[in-house]
Each structure stands twice: as C-alpha cells, then as structure tokens.
Image (cartoon, helix red, strand yellow):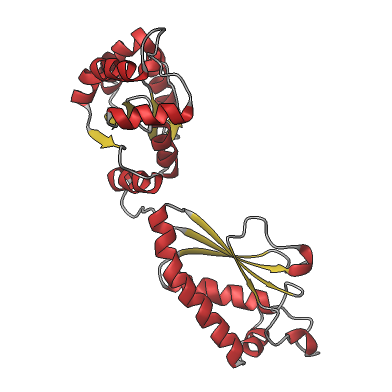
Length: 285
C-alpha cells in the first residue's frame, strides 16, 4: 500500500494538490489528525486492497500534535507501507498576497502577529519535515493548470496522463441544449433524412442514414470544419488543465443527422488516440 503525506506551508496549495491526486485514483483525506494516522493505516490495510493509494493532507493546523508527524510516518512504514512526503512550498510574498485575497487568518496568526510573521514562524517549524520530503513543489509562479501538470508528471502511473476526456453528445433542439455542453454545433442546416420515407423510421446509427447524411458535400465540409476546430482547441484545453469537454451536436429530432455526425466525430477522435465517448441523449425519446 502506498501512502502519500501532503504537507507544507499554509496557502501553498495542499488542498488543490489533493484534488489533482483524486483524479489519479488516490483516496484523499484532508486535515488528517496526526494521532490517528497509524490507526487509519490499519483500517486501510484491513480492506485488503480496496485502498491501494492513499493521500493524507496534514499541516500546522494540528499545532503541537504536528511535531509527531515524522514519528507517525515511521510507524506507518513499519506496517510494510510505502510512505512518501509531498511538501507544498511557496515564497513569503506570494503567501501574504494569497492570504490578503482570501481574507482568511493564518493558523499561526495569534493576536499581535502579522501574516508575514506567522508564515516565517511556520517555515521554521516545518523545516524538519521539508528536509525529509521526497517531493517539493513550489507553487509561487504556477497557475492551477501548471500545478496540475506538475503533479501529473510526478505521480501519474504508467499509461496515465492529463489528457482530456471528450463526450460527443447528440440532442434534439426541441428538448434544449445539454446543460453541460462546452461546444455546440447545429446540424439543422444539413439535408434531412426525415423527408425520405424509407429513412424516417431509422436512426443515425443505421448505415443507410449515415450514407444519406454524408452523401452531401456540405455535410462533409461541416465535419471537416469541426474536426479542424477540435484539432486546434483540444491541445489548448489540455494545456489549460481542462479534464473534460462536452461537444454537442443538435438537429430537429435528435435521431438522424446529429446522431450520425456525433458517431462519426467520436470515431475521428478515437482514431487520434483521444479518450472519447458518444452519447445520444434523445435518440429514443
């Protein structure tokens, strides 16, 4: 079993790091009491494999108990667990600015103690932990997406990446645009199979409907434009840290044109190695 202790300076991004690690299939617990760490490890071990990767966020909020962290880590290691420490760091001016923006008190900001003085005190108290850290990430000049990419680089297993997952969904305009849609394309301008008697009872998943829809040059050009746009946008979304994208294709009934185009677009993305799924929201309505 693998335990990752997420610690470091208040305001340096520990909670955000935990969010990213959840995407990497870690079971995360924020503000774990140090005194309960070994007991918690025992409970995880007792599940016999249910929790293989666990991340625990603990910091100076524990006050005096925090001094026992290194001892508790050794106790967990003695239970035949792999334990690593991720120390989240940042420079003092950045932390002061973050506290001013959040308007939250620093855990060590007692009466008469400034935020800067509290941060300096925390740096001193956490020095032994930082010295033992396996990974140190300084978030001072990192955007959220840059922090995510840094953590993925450190902790993503083989075959895992921060690539985006695309959901290509077809829909009926009469039932409304999907609420989670990021990009919406209107296929109502294309030739409609519903006006062909033999095709009307079929759907865009049937070969005959697909051949009809893509038998027109305007449909093929429509597809080329969407594919070109996604080829341009997806790398930028990934760089920005977006992990999910919903592309919605709509038509009059949500059964023919939008379904055929959504299926073709899903195949195009999958062929490029992109994690893509196809959903036909209104196909059977």
